[in-house]
Each structure stands twice: as structure tokens, then as C-alpha cells.
Image (cartoon, rainbow, N blue to C red):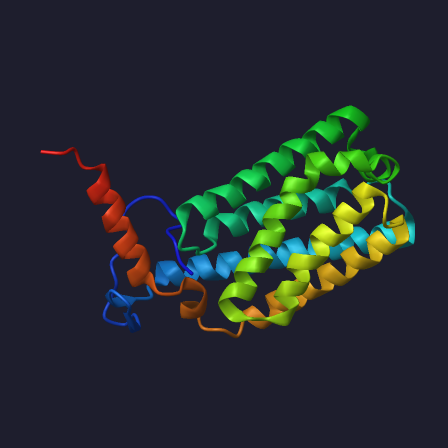
Length: 227
């Protein structure tokens, strides 16, 4: 899957850039593409490590003062959604909107109870899940994208376990311990997903750029005024 994570004109390919044959013609994977793919992988790894760190600290030391992990997760997911490659621009923008809404919900929670008490408040009042839920919907969306593109089983685990854990807790069907166990398993699967991506060629994450170029030309033609 591919889209243009960056604004502005695409950097020109060099003779050293590998060239692939796409559905709508040849395309090159440039150094700019490779930097974006590396940034996406590192940012998503930061989300996984943030989740694991938060859950481990919660388990070992309690639910106080976990906000630095939340900041790491918010920055990591925002950057991952900045550099992710998705064909459909509306879907890309929707995931970014979910991230923004979830971050705003987290800020509202922090303003209401204080940063140090965010997780205790969330544990005692699951309705706050409605405020931060869009953030995790965006993360589940990335999991679905990864499964759709690469058929990795850990990706479908991320996609299913996040809503199962949060909606189960919101509805009262899951006790806190079970919710934390599911989230812990999901964060481990996300880390496995990230680590398995680093040996892959950048072209796998970029996808068929000729499709994006074709769609971009269609959007440009549609934006032109009629004669």
C-alpha cells in the first residue's frame, strides 16, 4: 500500500535507486522513500516499547506516574502515521484524525485528574476509554494495514486484541486483570511485528508507487477547472 506521507514534490530518483515495474509503469524507490520507511518502523517500535514499558511499570510499581510512556506512545504513533504508506488518502487522513482525537482525549483526562493520576482514573472510570479510544483505533488500523499487506499473524492479533480489551473493559465484561493481560499480549505482538519489519526491503513498505502516481494524476486532473 502506498500514499504520499510527505507534502511537496517527490524527490527525483538517481541512477543508483532500484527500479520496479508497477501496475501503471516503472517506479524507483528513492533515498527519501527509504528514510520514510525507516522512520515509520522506528516510530511504530517506539509505540510498542511505550506500551510494554507502561504495562510493566503498572504491574511492578502501580498505576502512578505513567504519563511519560503515554507521551512516547503519542509521539511514536503520530510519526508512524506521518510516514506510513497507504494507497487511499481518505483512509490515511482518517487514521490521523483518530490519533488526534485520542490525543485530545488524553489531554482532557490529564487536565481533569493530573498527568500522574491518568491511569488510576482510567482504571476506576472506564468511561474515559471513550475519550482515548480513537488513539487505539488508529493503532488497530495500522495493525489491519500490516495484516492486509503482509498477512502477518501478529498483525491480526494487534488488530483484534486492542478493541477486544478496551471494549470488554468499557462494557464491564472483562475484569481489569484480563484487560491488562490482553493489552500485554497485544503489545508483545506489536513489538514482534516491528522487529520482523526491519530486515524487509523498503520497497515492501512503500508498495507499488505507480498506483499512487496514477491516483495523484487523477486527483490533479479532477481539480483542474473545466474549459
